[in-house]
Length: 118
Image 1 (tube, rainbow, N blue to C red):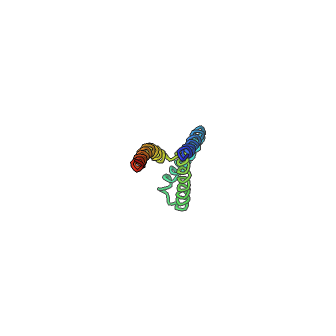
Image 2: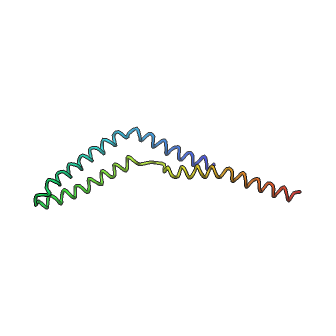
Image 3: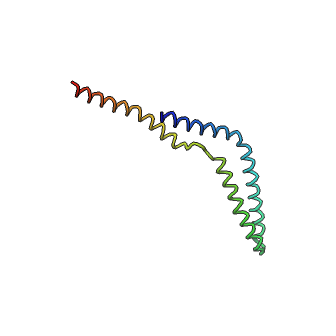
C-alpha cells in the first residue's frame, strides 16, 4: 500500500510538471523582458561611471539589485520541479531492495518454524 501511495504522489507531481511545461513559453518571454531591463540598467550604470552623479548611480545600483532578484526568481520558477529526482531514485532502490529482502526473511522464518515443528 505504501508503494501505491508513493507512486500516486510522484505520478501527480510529474503530471503537474508536464502540464506546467506547456506554459513555459510565457515564463520564458517574461524572463527575457526582465533580462533586457536588467541589461538596460547595467548599460546606463556603465555610462554614468565616468560622471560624478553619485545620487543617480546609487539609484541605479539599487534598481539593478532588485532587477537581479526578479530575474533570479523567474529563473528559479523555470527550473521548478514538483518532484525531486533524487528521491525517485532512492524510492525505486528501496522498492527493488525491499521485495527480495522480504522474500529472504520470509524464507528464513519459514525454515526456522518448520525446524521447530519437526
